[in-house]
Every structure is written in C-alpha cells, then in structure tokens.
Amino acid sequence: MIINFDNAATTFPKPDCVKAAVDEAMSKYGGNAGRGGHALAAATSEAVYSAREDIASFFRAKPENTIYAMNCTPALNMSIQGIMAGGGHLIISSMEHNSAARPAARLAEEGRITLSVAEVFPESEKTVAAFRSLIRSDTKAIVCTLAGNVTGQIMPFREIGQLCREHGICFIADGAQACGIIDVKLSDGINILCTAGHKGLYGITGTGLLITDGQFPVVPLMQGGTGTDSLSLRQPDLTPESLESGTVGVIGIMSLKAGVDFVRRTGIGNIFRHEDRICRRFISRLRGDGRITVYRSPAAQYVPIAAFNIEGMTSEEAAARLDRYGYCLRAGFHCAALTHALLGTKNGAVRFSPSYFSREEDAAKLAELINKM
Image (cartoon, rainbow, N blue to C red; front, top):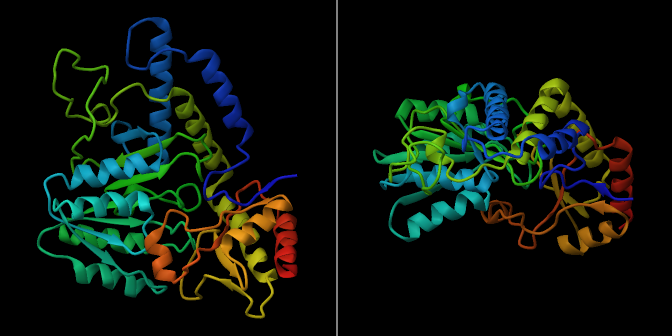
C-alpha cells in the first residue's frame, strides 16, 4: 500500500469530481478553444470560458485577467521577466523557490536588472522590515512566496502587499503552497498571483494560473496564435490573449475547474484544519530527544508542511527507508536553494505534506516508524 505524504509536490489522490471532469473533457470538448466557429470548437470555447469565470471568482479576480499556464513556473517566469523587461531593481525573499529565484538571478547576471534578497525571519515584523530596508527609488517589483515550499512558513504577504502599495511597486506572489490551503485573493494587495493547479487546487499536472489585477502590464515572453487578430503580426495587447499563445490545455483546465469547485464546496477552512491536525499530530509524535530536528519556530505560522532530519542519516537515506514501507515523502533540496541556505541544511531535509485525503492514523504510524529508525 502506498501512502502519499508528498502532496506539496502534487496532490494525490485527486477528488472524484476531478476524475469525472477529465473523462467529460475527453468525450465532449475535443475542439480547439477560440479557433473556429463550428459546434465542437464553440462548445470547447464556452467550457474554457466558464472555467475561467469560476476560477476568477474564487480569487476575486476578473475573468479576462485570469491566464492559464502549464504550471506555476511558467507563470512566475512570465510575470518576473514580463514586469522587469525594461530593467530596474527587483527584490525577492530568501525563501523563494527556484522557479522565482532562477529567472531573477539570470536577469541580474545578464545585467538587465539589479537584484536584492530580503532575509526571512520567523517574526513577521522583521521580515517586513527586511523588505522595507531594500526598497529604492528604482525598485519595480517584489517577488515573495505566500508559504515556503520546504518548511511551509506563511509569509506576511498582506503586510508586504501594503508595503508595495505605499511605494507603487508591483507585488508578484507565488501561491503554489498556499492556494487552496489558506484564503488568498487579489485584494490582499497582490498585483500578480502565480500558482500551480495540481497542488492545493487538486487539478491534474500541467495546470497553473497567472492572475493579475491589470495594474502592471506584463510584457509577453511568447508570441503566436491566439485566435484573435489573426491578420496582424503583432501580439494582442489585451489579456488573456496576450499571455496565452497557442492551444490551451482543455483537459487540464476542466480538471482545474473541478478542483477549485471541490475546494470551494469543502471549504478552505475545513481543508486547512484537517491537514493541520494531521501535521501537528505527526510532529507531536516524533521523539523529542534531539535526534530528530523539525524545522519550525514557535514565532512563525505554517501551512501543513513539516521538514525534518534524522541524526546519523542523510535526507535521501531516510526517505528511501520510509519508501520501502510504502510512505512517500520528498527528500533533498526541494528546488529551493535559497531556503536551504537560510536553514543551513547542507544535506537537505525530508518533507512531510498531507492533503485533505490523508488520514491521521497513517501520520501517527509514520511517526512511530521514524522514531524506531
């Protein structure tokens, strides 16, 4: 029996409604959305737009500013490189995933922007102060994850959003580990929200979102067919077409719509409480004799993720032993170089991340197994 506690990478299993949506899309929506006026294309276009409306309302956004992406990484790349296309100063946090840190670092290495990294502390006030101290007259954007993908620490994103408003700075937020787990909306001060569709929103892999309030235009990285202005060689200026070149992934979009509907019906608060209860029980059952290190601080708040290490073995060794008993946890560096530098985890860490379909008794048995190891 396989028990998945690696839901921060992608949730599994998926809700039945998501499976049903995939089947329906395969049988009904075989047209190319926005391409053609025949019945099959029209039905597919209508379904894609209906999904856009539902997803936009979930984040209190406008449908035309809700852009489909392949996952969170392309959304962050489009946002960071699109906003910083004309140069300027960018600030990121010391807890960013490589999907934000790498494009930022590349732009800085090429001399196209200047880059600063704000240190993250367990205390929200210190973290906000770190961002504030780095703002300059040419600062164009701040990129900050809403919740870290290694430890799950929740960032003071509403305070950072307010800071951005005060200085007229674009706030680009990475919601991959937060959306579907905590309540996130554009009115929190976020100008551009990038997120995965296959994690807390329960869509299939290959789904993601870029949602903007339209205040800061994003220069397209890609040009191509959009289904509109086909006689012009210029990319359309208006969203979503300007940022959606090529055929959209209809099956994935239908799964994402169903996943968002599942989260809405279940209730974000209920999802968080269930997962948090499992995570806290897991942590509380780990032996408190110093041989197991859990990377959490009482001064911080967390989404239901726990990173830990066992004395005397690498994170990969620990995860491999757990895998032999049917427990799936991720080890290593989690595509998060900055976070592990901040934590000082030179050999990485093991990450425990439940979902709404996880069971408390499985987490308790896992903790007992770790204690024996």
